[in-house]
Image 1: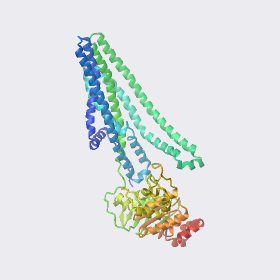
Image 2: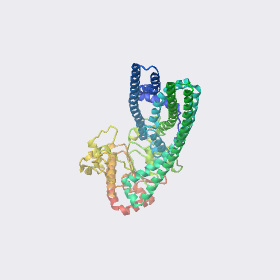
Image 3: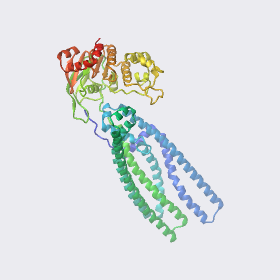
Image 4: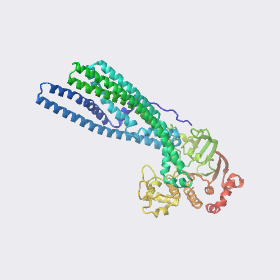
Length: 606
């Protein structure tokens, strides 16, 4: 099995090109806002720079009331138009950016739902996912943050040309000094932003641990364990410790930004003190008039702030580039469990063969299986039994291709399951797993769950009856329209663990997959109820292939073959009668359980 350890790196240029293409494909109207906003934001600052000069010239010369009034009207109208257009365009383009960000967020959510199952159990993948979401779920960071900076910096760059022209007309050396001064400030800002990004993954890891313990404290399903086991202080301590780690990391980021801001303040004082002294000297010596002094004074102040803004925006653009790279790195992670040939599925019934299969989980050297061989003929009912850790559930994960084998192959009707399209392959299975996760849908939707939400109510009722839950559902006020969980439906029901298991079993009956799998789905049921469920399964299987996994041996009576697993190996194989006559480990397990469930065994054997 190959693991995707390679992290793709994107340069600023590559991400800018990607953003331009994605925006063009998704929201071309945003380009019109970009052009209009750039022009308005470039013109806006010069209204307050140039009009005071003209006004002072008019007041210091032979004042003409008509010209003065005209000048004031033009000034106020120009200012009103520019500021209104700037505010309106800002609101409009930001709304477009938020909508655009949501399209990327939707793709990321789709990636999370469709990614290889093994990724959902991989801490490295989960950290990468959190880093990606960190760049999407805030307005000023990552995807949207980068677009915002691009909008801001475009008008700033255009206006900067005007500033350069005005300052150059004063003295070219003044321009060079201003540029040098702000570049020094930029260096400190880049240092702080880079430092902040380097701490981002550390923060993401601390936050993941914190969120886990935080959710436990607020999840009432842990209420009994927290109280009876005395875990409240320990869980609170763990959450507090991770929170403290985050605070320490954030403090280091704060001080890095503080030092950069302090350096910027010092450079600003030096810059403005020297330039203003130079301008005042020129006025005193008669080399500069009051009107020009006002224009240059405003220009120098604005130039420094404007250029500082540009430098800060470039630093921010570089920082946001890291976040966008995280998003793209996560989105572009290739799936490992690919099926390049996409062989069509063979016709039912289905035989299954594990041929010389070895397997260890990613990032682990501990082998679960070593050269495992097991053949399940078409239509066979196989029971897999064994103690915890014997490899029973891993067998199902490999069969369902939630993981790929490390060595060897798994065959379906003689064809390697890697050759099939995964979506088509998944449709073969009606599976009920140990962990039951009801959705906040109605009972009917939970049982018939599918993409189209079409429900065959006759089939639904039959499935509920076979799962021995129909009578209970019929007694509810809204029957099969009863919502499961209260999170979305105030009238929803919080079903018990056993009821949730029965509904999950009904889902398997409803789907009518050609391969049935029960991976210890009856743990919350008593032995009598478990035996009854297995009897219904026995009747519903017909000629389909079925695999049952259970600690309790109620399922073994009606199965054709029993495979007993231990340490990833099949140590005993045969029918119930054959294994009992061998007096091996299966017989020992059965005899031990029969002392407690003798009556249940008799019911199951009828």
